[in-house]
Amino acid sequence: MSNERPALLVLADGTTFHGRAFGADTERAGEVVFNTAMTGYQEIATDPSYAGQIVCMTYPHIGNYGVNDEDDEARRPWIEGMVVRDLSESASNFRSTQELDGWFKDHGLVGIEGIDTRKLTRRIRIDGAVNGVLSSVDLDPASLRAKAEALPSMQGQDLVKRVTCNESYEWREGWPAPWMKRDGNGERAARRIVALDFGVKRNILRSLVAHGLEPTVVPADTPAEDILAQEPEGVFLSNGPGDPAAVTYAVDTIRGLLGKVPIFGICLGHQLLALAGGATTSKLKFGHRGANHPIRDHATGKIEITSQNHGFVVDEESLGGTAFQPTHTNLNDMTNAGIASEEHKAFGVQYHPEAAPGPHDAAHLFERFRGMIEGGSATVTP
Image (cartoon, rainbow, N blue to C red; front, side, top):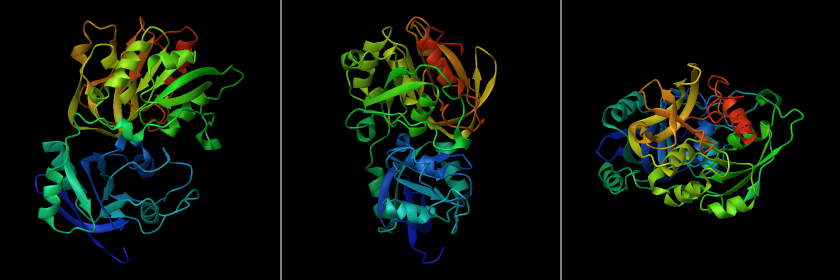
């Protein structure tokens, strides 16, 4: 890059990476994780589920297609910082409106390029996710290590309060461009739902609309009685950051909704649904983050290639004695990737069906939710 500026990424164990800064001149700290997707850096940066995290992109060439005005998943970026091997100095794509470096500057974000991202990823794979500090203003490794050591563990953190909306709003926007459209509403009547915002992605809301659902998005701490007072035909539980076990108010809300209205949860919403049903969750060693995770659907035996972003997982053995059954399995490590309860008319998945790595392997789950609202099964897509 021209106008090269030094930057450091220092982990809590003292591992130090020297590189070049891009974006703003600042310092950010958080849990250092990696994502294996080849594309989607703008969606990753603006996904609220990454709040409190510095993301290392394993694909070496980042920024080559720039950023645009349509692909933000939230009102602003939520990552703490980004680590890349090679930042493209130019962007080439008909949808691009800005280069990644300038976009980071505009949002006060710092990134580091020119480091061995394979070494960093291997460190996380072997020893687990670790806290770190990324800085272009403090270049003293000992100082940055001390700051990293002082950071709290992701386990036990409620980050939902940081990313949820402050007040309720209605969402009616579908897919903004012709090439993004999938299953349209046709002539079907719209179904009114409430979406609990734990850090919801805009593409999830667009997918709900695309399947004939009209979401009213409400803050994460909205109690069950207030939700039921709106007389929704279904309730959606969104994705979000942090430790699900720390979001106790959401678990209480969901417990108050079980059996009273059809429920669909994605990612953190799936984990909170399991906790409300009596199961437990635990932290994964390095999490699942990427666009190439194979998931087996128990009902059909089919494999879906999925997009994922989570550091916690439902303990499948804890589902015994609850009204929920496991419905999906992650074939990389055989962890739980889905649950359902016909008794409660509720289901959840650990992955992101609104994303398109398969490209549309999991989009049918939104149709399952609509079908459940109309009296169908929680486990079988219409």
